[in-house]
Image (cartoon, rainbow, N blue to C red):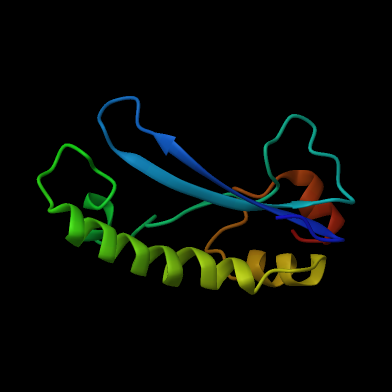
Length: 117
């Protein structure tokens, strides 16, 4: 999803160890070079979430398809779409970054750009 100041991205990643998948998302600030990065901010749906949520993308379990589909849709809407709709500019990326528990996952170029320590 491309905007004037930022791009939004989402990808599905398969675990190397099982038939489990992860939904990753983040933002690219167009005025800052990526220098080999995929995105400037990185988050994963369900990081720190409950076990039931992570089981939805574990294809080795026996959850009924209807249950998986219904609950996955709900989690995607609440945990991904709602969060991504709030970020539409550099200022809103900064506001998002300020909600993170640590800045350790934010690249130095982004910290410098926003004068974060």
